[in-house]
Image 1 (spheres, rainbow, N blue to C red):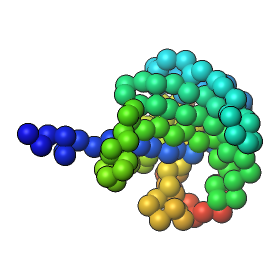
Image 2 (image 1 turned 30 degrees about the vertical axis):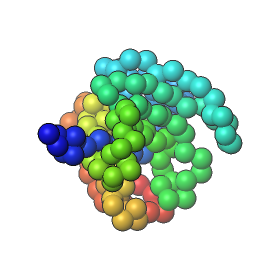
Image 3 (image 1 turned 180 degrees about the vertical axis):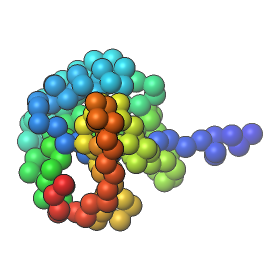
Amino acid sequence: MAIAENIYGARLKVFIHFEGTLQDLGSKIGSGLEIPALRYEEREDEPYDWVGYVEVLGFELELRSVQHSEKWPNFQYVLEAMTTDSIQEIFNDRMFDISLWMARYISLICEVTTLAESLDKQTGQSFYYNKTTLSRDCRIIEAGSCL
């Protein structure tokens, strides 16, 4: 049977605007998404900053700060994830990108402004939702521009 040929992995990369610490954002995301607490470790390579990790629902998630991003200046953090053990899928370019869906979902559940890059990497789609006022904001942003 050739069932394995139809199996794909998934990945996501969501930029997040948040004015608190990495650990505060990790708590907010963990609580909102109802996932286990992130563990924090110092990177082995420069810039040696702290990174939050958690493995959940078959994904390895990494939350880290973005140092002085010229491309997305209003977004201080990035959440990246990919399905666990997806080496074959990466090699065969069979990874499904769920960034747009996850950016929208995180904004709705965690009340933070999020952004998912478009395939061209020069534009992105930003999302925000306020549960109190029920206001939603969704816009296309060009790289290098502010919110």
